[in-house]
Image (cartoon, rainbow, N blue to C red; front, top):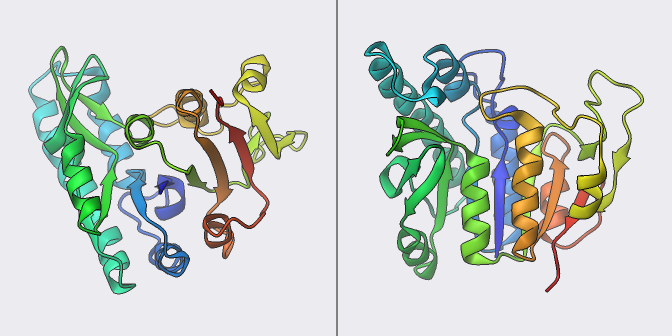
Length: 260
C-alpha cells in the first residue's frame, strides 16, 4: 500500500485563489489508475485554503468573532477543491471516497488529540480509495486550527505502515536550498534522517500557512521512525508518479526510513 500526497502547489496555482490545475490532476489520476496499487490519497489545500486561512489567521486559534466566518469559508473552499479532485479520480475509474479531517479528528494546540482510523480501514477493506486533505478542524485548546495534509500523512503512515510514502511536489525532490531562487542549491538523490539532521542550510522552499518545505522535513523525520521510505518527486513531469508506483527509478529524492 502507498500513501500519496498531492501537494497544493501541484494541483492549484498558489498565487491565484481557487485556481485548480485540471490537466495536471487528470494526468496524475490516470497514472494512479494505470499503476493499479492500493492507495490512500491526501492532497494539500493550495490556493483554495491557504489564502483564506492566512487572511483570517485561523492557525492562531479563535481570537475574534470575524474568524468564525473565515473558518466556515475555508472549510467550504477546501471541500470544493476536494470535490474537484474526486471528480477527476472518478472520471478515471478510481473508487475515491472523501474523508474530511474535521469529521474524523480533533486537535489540541495543533497536535492531534483524536482520530478515527477505522473509517479509513473500513473503506480500504471494501476496495475504496480514501481521499483526505488539508483542512480546518476543532482544537480543544485553541477553539480551532489547521490540520495540514502533512500532519495527516504523518499519522496515517504510523498507523498503516505503507510500502512507500510519496510526496508529489513542484520540484524534482529535496535540495539544500530553494532551487527556484538559489542556482547553487544541491540536489539530494537519496538521504537518511541522520543526514537531514546535519544540514545547516535552510530547507524552507516556500513559506506558506503550513511552513512549506521546512514543515515537510519535520514530517519526513516522523515518517522515517515508522520504517517507511519517503519519496519526493515532481508531479509536473509526466509518468514520474506512475514509474515510482511501479518500482522504476526516476529523478526524485528518497529518504530512507529507519530500519528496525
